[in-house]
Length: 415
Image 1 (cartoon, one colour):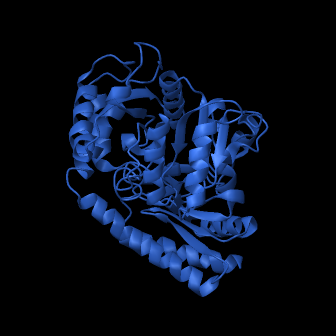
Image 2: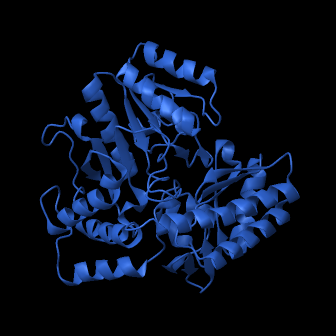
C-alpha cells in the first residue's frame, strides 16, 4: 500500500470495492494519469468506469467550471429554466440529435445512469401497460432494485433473484434464425404471465465483457418491437458519448431506439448527470410524474455544452477515436497470437475493448500486476475473465503504446 488506509478500513463500509484492487490513496489527476499521495503516477485505462472519457481535469472543461463557480452562477435548479440548461439543450440538439435525425425530447432525470433506466422502464410501462422486460445475458443496467432486477449479470444476487417479470435472452454475436424466432416468440408470449413492454439492451456491453451485438440483429429488434408494439430502450450509459467511435454505440445498426439512456461521460468532466432522450411522440409524462432533486446540475450543463462544442462540431474526434481503437485492437490481437492462440480472444468496439483470458484467476492476476507497474485496468464479463480497457478517449498514442506494453508485461508475469 502506498499510504496508510487505516481510516478507510475503520470508518468505511465493507461494500467498498475498487480500492481493494487499487490500494493507493489517489490525490491528483490530469488527462490519462492519476497520482497518489506518494507521487506515484498511474496510467489510467479505466477512466472512472467510463465516466471520464474526456480525461481527468480536461483543461477546457475545468476553465468552464471555474468560470461558472467564480461568477456565482446557479448550481442547483431542479427543473427550472436557466441559461446553462437552454444553451445545453440547444447544443445537444444541433450537434447530436439533428445530424442523426433523432426527433427525441430531453428528460433530465438525476445523477445516475440507474435513474435514467428506472425512468425509461416506468415510461415504457405507462405507455404499453405492460411491465415485462426483455434483456440479454451479460446485461448490466444499474444497482437500484429495479435496474438490478433487469440486469442479467446481477441476477445471481439474492436481492433480485426472485423477480419474475424479466427474461434474459442469449447474447447475439452472430445472428441466426433461432435468435430471431426466440425474440419473436418471447415478445408474443411474454414472461411468467407478464406481457412485454420493453426491450432493454446495451448495443455494446460493458460489464458483460466488452461485447458488441451483431448490428443485423439490432435492426431486427427494431422491426419486431414495432410489430409487437414494444418500446426499445438503448442503455448508452457506458458505451455512449463517443466511447465506441460514433456518439452512440448503436449508430448505423438500424436499432432506432425509442428511449436512449445517457450518463457517465455526458458532463464531460465526470460530474453527476443523467438523462433520457425520448421519442417525441412517446413523451407521455404528466408534469411532475417523475422527479428528482438533482435533475438541474447547472455546472454539468455548462461543462457538457463545452464538451459537445469542443469534440463534436466535426467528425474529426470520431475519426481519431477509431484510429486509436485500431492501435489497441492490433495490440490485443498480437497478445492472443503470441501468448494464447486458441485460448484467449479479443472483443470490443472503439475504445471499449476486452481481452478474454478464459480464467478469473488469470484476469485478476493481470490486473494486479498491471497496477504494480502503474497501469490501472479492470476485469469484466462472466466470472470476470476479461481484462477491460476503458482508457480516456483523449489518451495520446504514446500513452496508448506505453499502457499496452505494461499490459503485455503483466500478462507474461501472470502466465
